[in-house]
Length: 386
Ligand code: NAD
Ligand code: TYD
Image (cartoon, rainbow, N blue to C red; front, side, top):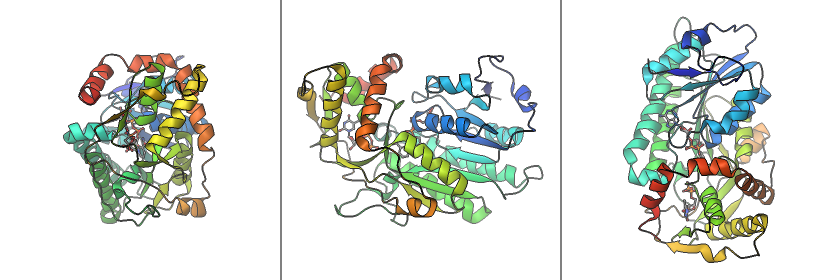
């Protein structure tokens, strides 16, 4: 059936069968939540937060373990949290999704699994349509079938929470404006087009079948465990290795950055207190031009490495721009703040220092994922540019 269920705890048998897992005593389990993409960057922080904060929930982390999925991200959770379960599988496999919903009596979904990198979407848009659109559709369908079945118990008390991005709104032209929940969708990259499409399917299932859905659209995340294809970890790794820092275009594009644990806290808030059918924008009013952010990353990394100030400035290398590069993203999170009381907990200066420290102190983590396939990716993506 294409499923390997692995209980992460070291004191248990390494790989009990699906049926052994299903026979587990469910008496004290208050909720059974399926988190997809939990081995990825944001997902791993969400899994950790839920496993630790809600010991009476059972957390099923379903992940295909693509290049971006890494169980090392959750080694501490697997060792410490008895309520954590890992399932290796593909959200596009609808039969598997049906078995999971029925077999584990899932009552909540937090859906993060996706292809997530814009540059890869420019190379291979089909992979993004497959996972982000069809994969989301297969999860929606499995949730709908199970929750409306005799054994599923109806839609009351259930929730399908879809994690999306601010990129669905397109690029802001007016420097004074922000994305709000009612901003029109205007995706500009294959990645954002696939995420926009998945958002539409989620709302369509809410409207057409009464599926209890909620969506959040977050700005750029940064923090530990991000795959070093994205700007911040890629640049930290390159500074560490004295490699060129490829700045796309003029470096004037603007992004709005949020520490990943604050995103996970927002997801917790929305999962528990968000209103069904609503959308919430998540961001920290923290806009940076790429080139200014890059200078902060260089200064901080040099300082933490004990290098003289400005030592790595010379690594900055302007390279041809990304095709269709969105000029500016900026989120207005007022609704989330006023209705649900969420605010970011970290100032950027503290978050970026904590992040850089983490990458420098976890070189083994970086070294494991930057060999082999990563080197090929890097050569393909940047070889012709630098
Ligand atoms: P990521 O690429 O680090 O992780 C994605 C995870 O999904 C990986 O563990 C991967 O193995 C898994 N996955 C991919 N295809 C799968 C499939 N077919 N079946 C099961 N698992 C699969 O991504 P991320 O940065 O952690 O983003 C997580 C989610 O948050 C995505 O939906 C993304 O669109 C959204 N998001 C990301 C950001 C950001 O700045 N990174 C901002 C806003 C929203
Ligand atoms: P990225 O981390 O890929 O996130 P997104 O494209 O989803 O916002 O890129 C952040 C910004 O940094 C974006 O404007 C593109 C730019 N960038 C570079 O200049 N060089 C790079 O090597 C990368 C990966 C990104």
